[in-house]
Amino acid sequence: MKNYHATVTVTLRKAILDVQGKTVESALHSLHMPQLGNVRIGKHIELSVQAPDADTAREVVREACDKLLTNPVMEDYAVNITEEGAA
Amino acid sequence: MKLGVVTFPGSNCDHDALHAGSVHGFESVRLWHKDTSLPSGLDVIVLPGGFSYGDYLRTGAIARFSPLMAEVIAFANAGGLVMGICNGFQILCEAGLLPGALIRNAHLDFVCRDVTLRTETNKTPFSIALAEGSLLRIPVAHGEGRYVAAPDVIESIEANGQVLFRYVDVTGAASEASNPNGSTNNIAGIVNAAGNVMGMMPHPERYVEAIVGGADGRGVFESLVRHLAGIPA
Image: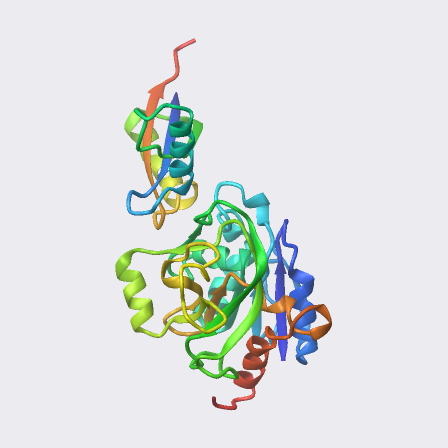
């Protein structure tokens, strides 16, 4: 078994208006940064995973996303897996 | 008639729901989220309002996995009457007993005030005592009550008569101004396709006696009584 570090990025699905993102965008514009746009606000989740290989680790994290960490009705997610440095 | 109300850690409208049940002649019984069985002879289960598990992760996302929820889901799938109010609605959506999801209000503010609801159908156990088109004044109190679902889901619940209540103005018109949270099509409450599971963001249990500000919430409980007594609309 190896130790992996997983990060999950959760965002509202593209079809759903991200009102937090819109509000922050207009605040940025009022702070004289009109060059910034398309602000989207999501969640960042970190986990450690014990698995024989990276593919299995990814599989387990995706299962966690589908069961609990995200709601497919309103959210999309991306999983990133890195092996923790050998001690 | 027996009405059970599930208390989750963070529920805060459970006693209101128990009281509303008692006022309408139900034997109101408390149910605990860690219970692994339901009492016998239960007619209705209410998932009450509140902030179960502090709304951590997503509203209702953790409560949905409470031990008792497996029993609630089995009860619903066997045709039992289940009503989710506010956080209870969010839990039912997370549990997959109702379509769609409730997300952050469009204006980002917590909204706590009376709203006007239009009764869209009385062909459900939760609205049988109400006239279609009748207007109810009922309070809302939520930060995440914007009902969303995929376009084909919205189309199907509209076509199947699953929209129970809609936010409207005092003239009964569903306008943008009368929509307190940006819900799709001003949807305030829905039922599942079978009609035995209902979720609504407004709080009928808070308005069952004029002394607390209103009694328009009675219609929902009177409907349950009437349905259980077998009296048609």
